[in-house]
Image (cartoon, rainbow, N blue to C red; front, top):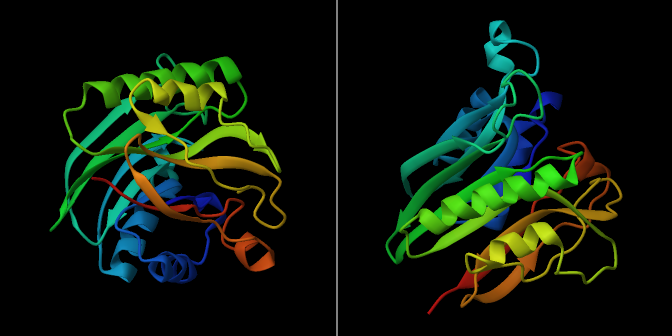
Length: 232
């Protein structure tokens, strides 16, 4: 599951936790989430979590408002990795981008989840960041790897285009988009920004994204995406 929860707008974390638990995911990738929010969500759910800072929206003096990425899971989390994918960009501005990875281990095996929130206003930089993420996935030795997050790659409503350049970058490391629907803006979605990319050999059982509306808009401007799959 992936979800950009727009933490700067102070969403109702009890409602966010309820929406997550209803879908019973094994692992969740969150974007635009503050450290305290990730901690409180994990507490609501009774889960584990890891978090990393993406940028300070104001200054380090207001450190508690720093936004970042998180991984939540009811299973054990290990192998936390964090790296910058926007070299040369200050951590004080929103254009600073990072990659977070963690391994969720359950009885049947382990899944290595890479969480990203790519550039929103510069297509060339977005592709470059996707390439950097793919490089880290390629270098990782985990058997089962997944990339999820707000890739900011606009696929208009009704489009079946799976050849967009950002997604193609991940095909080079054996990760594929198995389809989905629009995710933003949540009140009346018309573009797809949020993805879960799974291994080539995976059998996707279902994908789930809410239809949107006022209730979802009160939580975030993005809708959550759930992809259920199995591997041989």
